[in-house]
Length: 67
Ligand SMILES: [Zn+2]
Image: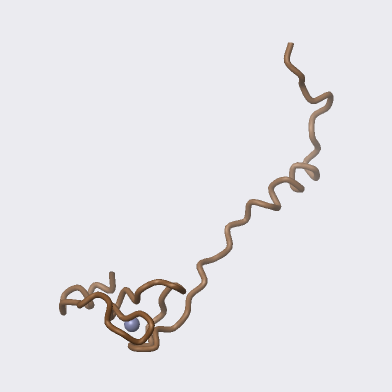
């Protein structure tokens, strides 16, 4: 027999464990180039700029999608 917990955990004690698994919402900043919301430390998905320079050259249909 493998080791087992002696007693069932109560509803309150289950909450102690699950309190550590909350996923924080994605931190969004504003793009310095196009002022659209974008995730931090990521090339802007709208205009392709990062750190004040163009990293990805966006075609018009790409920037229209916003992806
Ligand atoms: Zn941008």
